[in-house]
Length: 219
Image (cartoon, rainbow, N blue to C red):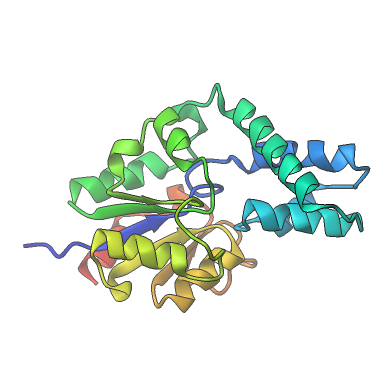
């Protein structure tokens, strides 16, 4: 019988490109506070919790705020972000994602989501891939942000696989570090010059052949 491994996917930038919607929502907040917020600044928020993301933006503008103001902005940001997701569908899936999920399912492997997003389930539903996932761990389930490996360790536990049998697909440095700290195999999706700490790197899933996945399964 084929041994089942655990394949854990980050969401933003790996399965879907919701980063652009996060950027628009954060920029709206930043603009209202007269804080310059560019795409380069947005890179600082990759793999980071919503609360910490707001703090980073406020630090960029040297803006001090009360907890009440912060909570108001966090609610506003999420409402704006969700408004961008209303029309989301399977066309939002990044290249090659569907093929990889199909291959893993066809080979009876275990699949989990490990994301800081608190909107993971509706995104998976709208893109039509929720049934592929055996476990979902999102920002509602963890207290420590990446590079803490908590989100991936919980996912592996839910899949009932050991860390050494877990493979993590990530597009952020913090996510790669979290997988490495958790003693899992890290697979960078994106720029290998940025994700150089990953055990393996691919520009996107279309560059990942089934032979590579087969090797991981048989590892």
